[in-house]
Length: 443
Ligand code: S3P
Image (cartoon, rainbow, N blue to C red; front, top):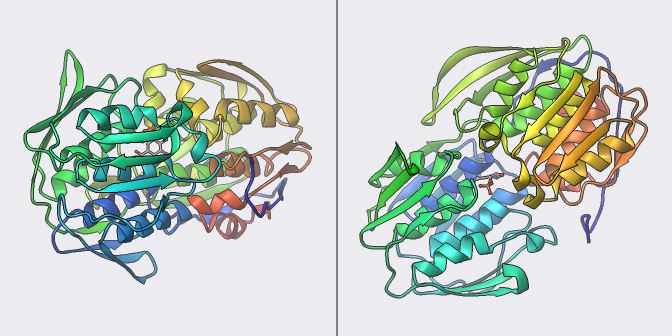
């Protein structure tokens, strides 16, 4: 099945200038981590600005199943009474992480060094995604793991009784692999070390340090090396979740391609491990001004002022891929309106996201009159300044594919349809009213 049980076809139409303030929801990566670290701490963690998308709500449910007390106090405001490192209890039922790769991978790590057994599953998209990249390092800690063929979900993990510290070089640039290992390393005596070729998003490291773990990161000739001292007592914290730069990318892109637009997007995280899209857009000539740069919740943030203007195609270097890995679908939409080709290199990981995002974007753009070339690990969008539209894009249970094509349709000559907008609720439940509030014609 490549769409939701209750698919929601949607259409976007050419819109007049977008105007107003786009207040996007809390960061998805940080929201998952706040719930998981809250659950592994002693005391009450108060979270504000939590993303209340389906992915994160599934993680909240999972933390309850492992014994933490998780309560919603109000809009984005949550309380977690944790059980402490090594304090997870065995869940009664199967842990269903829905559509969320981050949720399932981080939670598998968090329980793999505690002597309990848990079974994990997810939706059709998640059950297709590779999990051996997580279960391989977790078995090195001593966990016993049974997976479906090809290392897929459902997966049962019997946590290690007497876990051993691990030193692991990640085979692909992935913050999910790194974070699963670090979370497993919490309940292990001694030092757990992760080595990555390129630095990936560092929210786990920042938050672990904030909760009192001893953790350090250094750039060496071996790569980016992160060392965690095991068995810390994590102390409950107040966590203010900054707004999600990956969600901000959609209204930002819409304002860049719809003539006459001018919008503001307040409080967006500018963490350098997440800002590759913004670097690339500036390179393309985008009119984006970063105002009021400051720190919020331990992350650098700024208010964005975004205006429509001419854009040129660029080459995105492979080294930048990790810092914008979720933004290539929306970049390929912006690229379709630029003059000249935009080449995206080193993007093989896109093939194993919620969908094969290279294939999904290429087919959907072609259906709307844009020429795209692809290889296993690159994609080139031939921008011609305008896009015909008139096509339907298949979204394959992928929220970012759905939102990308709705943004595309705001500036095409003919309307753009998507087969299913239901997955948008996984990361950006208010996407449609927020865009309509900017006067975008979609629904
Ligand atoms: C995430 C890491 C990225 C990203 C995902 C969120 C995280 O995945 O695509 O949406 O929160 O750690 P990979 O680490 O697998 O690249």
